[in-house]
Image (cartoon, rainbow, N blue to C red):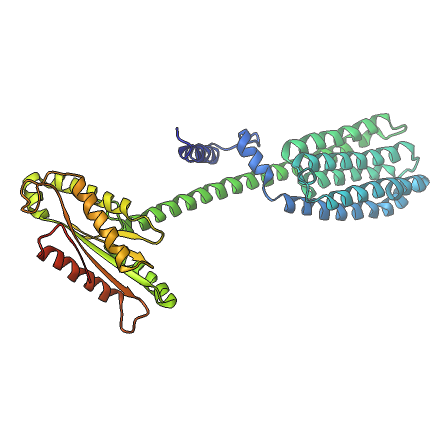
Length: 411
């Protein structure tokens, strides 16, 4: 496989993967390695921005629960306030600040780094709740367990952990609560199921929502990748169609339509700069007899060979060669004097003759020859036009044919 084909084959395989995932689904919330890496790497700055903003909001909500501390566990309020305001809040604020200051570094917005930060902060918040519950003797402390459900929603819905991270986080929080309930002294056993089931229900519902959000996000990514590929393919097809509309299929030279468009643009630049433009018209001598004698396939091959010689003979920047019609070819040479253009045309005439392609029915020579007409004009000359220059080159070509063919004439 060539180096040029490798990216094309890679894109095809990748799009096949995308289409298979769209058709078959991705229940385990994971793409093949390369696609998974690109999915996780999309919009890193936006992901980090969401994490920091939602983290600040969550931190304010966390500290706002001091009111619940005061009302439900007043006997350990001072300890709860210390945990929230003097330990958890400063550490979290410093972590958010460091992430923001290093936002241009890849590690700062890496999905694993963000998920780890959410896991650590969420589990630490759950641990502070469990610790406060373990030391309080307040009769209202049973209601304090609702805080665990809030922690679960923070990780699964607010910070939108990836599904498998959210599952592990939820189970860890639920475990902390259950262990706390079991070891708490004098805990009403009749409240174990209602309290734990509330957190378990929050875990189940929030995980369902988290799963749907990630599934939809992944599906949108696959759809956008497929759309991007379709747009790219459409652009390539459109480009090929544009190229085909400008190229002569037989000779691979530009066609007459594109030549005229190119000449108009070149003429405007030459007119502005006051420079000369040269037109060379070339016709294959006695082509109809050649075609009739040797056959159309041989005639097509003859035109291709002549086109190749003409294309290879004119290589200056801005030179452009086209098939003008039938066995007639045309070239435009910008900023070239008539003398240099005649020399180029003579080299071209000789190169075609030196190909020595047999032409048994030619009265000129027993090989394929060409006649050429050269015309030159300063584009800034009053009254000069591109069509006028082409007509002038056509008259020069007529003179070359009239003088016996296999000649170069100029005007």
